[in-house]
Every structure is written in C-alpha cells, then in structure tokens.
Length: 330
Length: 262
Image (cartoon, rainbow over all chains, first blue to last red):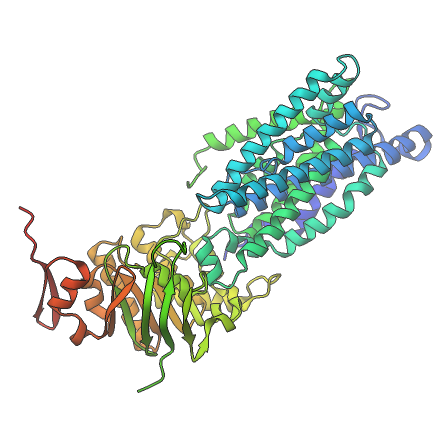
C-alpha cells in the first residue's frame, strides 16, 4: 500500500503540538494577538493568565475537538452514513435541555450545569435506543435515526417551554449563551472533569479502529467475519456518545466539528478507519484549538465558540462539496 | 463415500411463530470438495437457509452439523474460520480500496485490537490473484462494476480461508459473460479442494458447475441428488411451477421454458 504523508506519526503529533504552543501565547494580553515569550518569565499576571486560564482552556478546546471528531468518525461508520454527526440520537438536544433545566430550577453554577447537560445528553441516547428497539419495521440504522429525530424534537419542545418560563433578564441570557457554546468559563476543574472519560474513550476508539471497518459492512457480512455485531456496535456507540456528552456538557452546543473533520480526514488518507481515525483525532484537536483562538482573540468580548465552528464548518463543508474530488456514495 | 462436511437434518424455521414456516423439514448433506447448488424460485427460503447455516438465525427445530458438530457449539469466531459468506449484495458507503476491503476477510484470525499484519496483506493479495483481479487492488470499491464487485466479494471471503464457501445468488445480477467468469472461478476453487454451496434461481447457472442440486420450493426441499438425477424436465417443472424442458446438447444442459406468452 502506498505511504501517505499525513499518516506519519511525526505529523500527527507535531501539528497539534505546534498549534497548541503557538495558541498558548495568543490572546489579548498585554495587547491583541501575541504575547512575547519574555513576559512569561517576569510578569506575574502573564504567568497566572497562561497557567490558570489559558492552559486549561486550550486543553479543553483540544479535547473537545478530538472527542467530537472521533465520535463523528466512529458514528459515521457505525451508521454506514457519512452525514451522521455525534449530536444526533438526541444527544445535543438532550444536553441543551439539561443545561437550561439546571439554569432555571437550580442555578447557573458551572459544575451543576455541566452535570445536568451530560446527564440529559446520555438520557437522549438511552431514550432513542429504547424507542428504536420497539420499532417494528426497518433496519437498525433507520430505526435509530427515526427515534433520534423524535427524541431531539421532544427535547427541543422542552427547551422551548423552559425558555418561555425563564426570567428574561437573568436566566434567558444564560440559557442562550450556553446554547451558543463556549469555553470562556473553563478552569482546571473542567479539564479534570472531562479528561478521564475522554482519555478512556479515545483509547478504546484508537485500539478498536480497524474493527470499525467491519462494522461498516452489512450485518450479515460482519457476522460471517466473526464480529459480535451487536456488542461491538453498542460498545463503540456508548463510548462515542459518552465522550461527546461530557465535552458538550462543559462547552455547550458546539456543532459541525464532528461532521466536517472526519470528512477532511477521509479525504486525506482514505476511508480505512485504521488510517483515518488517528488523523481525525489529531485534526479535531487542532480545529478545536484554532476555533477557540478565534473566539477569544478576534474581538474585545468573547465570540461564542459554537458560532465560530458553525461558520468555519459550513464554509469548509461547502468547499468540500463543490470540490471536484468529492465523492458521496449513497 | 466421505463424511459430509455439512449435514442438515429436519430444519424448521419461521420468522413469526404465528405464521407458516419459511423452512419445512429441510434435510440434505454437503460432501467436501463439491459444488452444491440450492436451486429454486424466488421466495423458496434459500437466503434464510444460508442465514441459518451461518448461525445468524436460530432454527425452531432440527440441526445443522458442521464437520459432525452442531453449529451452535461453534463460537462466532470459530465459525467464521470455517464458513465464508458472499452476500447477495453489499452496499459500502465509504471509499475503501479493493485491497483494504479484501483485508477485512482476515478478521476471523485477528483479535479485537489487532491490525492486519504484512502476512495478512500477503494472503489478501493471493486471493486477488486467485480471482484474477490483481489489477483492481487500489481501485475504490464504489467505482467497480457489478461483475468486478462480485469477484472482489469472493476474494474477501477467500481471504477468510474458509473450508466452506457460501454464496447467496452470486450470479443473479450479472450479465452472461460476468456470470460465466464467476462460475469459472468457483469451478477452479473446487478443483483446488474447496467446498462450495451457492443459491440461485437460474437453472442454467446451476447446470454449468454444480455437482449436486437441492431443489427448493416454498420452504420445502423437493429433490436432492446429483445433476443427472435431479436436473430433469419433470423435477424442474415442479420446482418452478411452470413447464420446463431440459435438453442435453453437446455436454451442456439447455433449459427451455415451454410456456407460450403470446
């Protein structure tokens, strides 16, 4: 098989590390864009800024990008559909509902909102799953997609009710801001909240990446190749939803990463999951960091991260679709 | 006579217990090193039978013995080292290359966390040679023609190095030349000792390569046996429910429908 330069481990580690280090010196202190390295050695405020604000935030942005793109890549293969993203199956809408519920009935404390969002994201998956099991027609993929649509609509309606009831001066802006997504309030606590789940999840996905190819075949072929189709599929699905749910819990609704990065990765190294999953994870991390750099550096205020990822993501998507090398085989 | 490699006895199956059986008291044996063909009209239960032989469905009663042992006693992985499947069709939504796809056939020999080794790649390449499609190695699967895809699926199943190769309607969507190409490969595999079972609704495809026939209709096995005993006008007419004449000509069986449509 031909060697693809993108697969070289040096590139896979080097690009994210370089982007990470450069981003560490990027921000609006003391003036917009870059901070001189010397400042880190003798300015106490700069040290505090970099180590207790910027570093955890960058780590979160990277883990967010890695998780969403890995989950997107995995789910596209599990569902044998290149248009699936981790938010479907009620996960994103469940998270939004959970966050809003917490903001209005409990309070706006980050750890509570995160926990509630993660909990309802997983509830979204569980509901989709339970409903899909009871549908009497269609294949596995169709049933899950249909029940995912229904569960998402259900949570959207619930979110609507909560927004309607929310105090328009304090609670409604908090909900809206959360729904737009952002890492502005991230601290080391958040990093340690998502790190264990994300780490375990990514390791499972990386180790089982070649198996994903088998699960992308038809059920009967996969089974004839000795794959325990149901078990392996559930395992990878739960892992992908879990890592998406925790990062969405911290960052709010950040869409498009999980759809666009797997496409770019496949474009660069081909559909074989053994190759494209590592590229997907590395590029996802880079994309997460870059989007967050823009979110915190572009203006004096803070641009919600979800807006940046949607904007960049949709532009890239259109670019991919219009490019002559794009192939969709449906 | 050698012991059968697969022995099916009084197999009964239905998808819904309230409805009538899809398979009724199905019994037959498959000898090692032969090509057997399950021949019958659409809806005879041929694909269901294949699914049962792969352990994808459980029979209501009856047994399937593989090498003398009931297939329920095999683990999924063991079974995949014994039996390879070429499905009727395969929709692959991603741009796998032919070699990447054929390599998936090595799964029965790899642990859940393993990547295929150089030796696996070598075996996959050999199956491309066996099926005469070496030049397709790096082509993306979705770009293949129907005939090429059929050969690629066979190569993938051969990479499993199975003792029995099951093919579900391998020729039904191929033109005559591609059909013959596929059948020629099956014939060559048999000469090298493989045991092959394929289903078809096309009597001519069966007549070209089969050693033994299983004639099925509405979930029942009507006749089983060698070509000479079973590939006859009355038996085929009964199987298909329309008048069919078999003419022997120049060492070939020519099948002709006698029903006049206008």
